[in-house]
Image 1 (cartoon, rainbow, N blue to C red):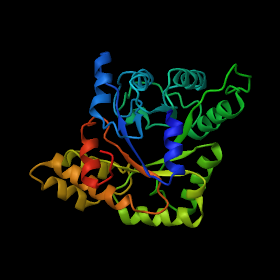
Image 2 (tube, rainbow, N blue to C red):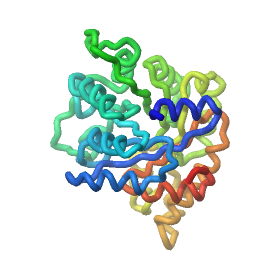
Image 3 (cartoon, rainbow, N blue to C red):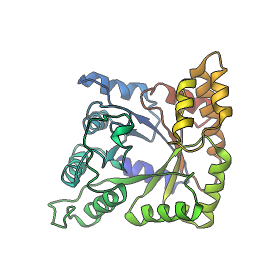
Length: 301
């Protein structure tokens, strides 16, 4: 069963999917990529391979292909920061030919934020334009420039969404643009502020946007007080409260406390109407995915 069939059939059956993130290794060892398949729970509906999200790592496409070859359902993250449209189009075709079933279209954090400050960015197109272009490839068998292709890639298309973007009208406008671009599922940024997230989800369901796209809420197991503090200061994931920082800072085992907090969030999120699943942002700490699934009672652990 392909990734698209597996996810689509789960949603058609009314089941919420469970996915998790992984990161390519920092070296060139194929076995390191293969080990990810053993570390991440076999019951996951899909593994989302990050693309140099935190530092320069091994090729995300190569890692995705290895995982797909080992029978895992895989979504490849494609980042417009690092590639122009020629490279992005080639990677999309290559991913499909290698058995990767889906792509997640993102713009990526600016390289000055830590990935490689000395690098020149591409940003030839943005994530919405990338989604539109791949949608045309899939539906019409035409390349980014409109030329006919010999065959269309079979890819499920995803994008990301920030639930804490204000004002709400702008938030929903951007969400509608991602739906119109052809995204079939959306992964949210990590949810720490449940009250704010529920407010956003209520607005989304009131506008019936959840009926047009599958929304998957992301949770992140914090591993240290330092990580929590940096996230609170940076604001990338929206509001991270002082209470969250204090709780993990005061724990005797920060990692265990981070898993507990993540599982609590996932447990509450899984019952919300309008959500199509839970995504665990455990890239770099892939062994935590199974713990979160088990503690949150997500099933299929």
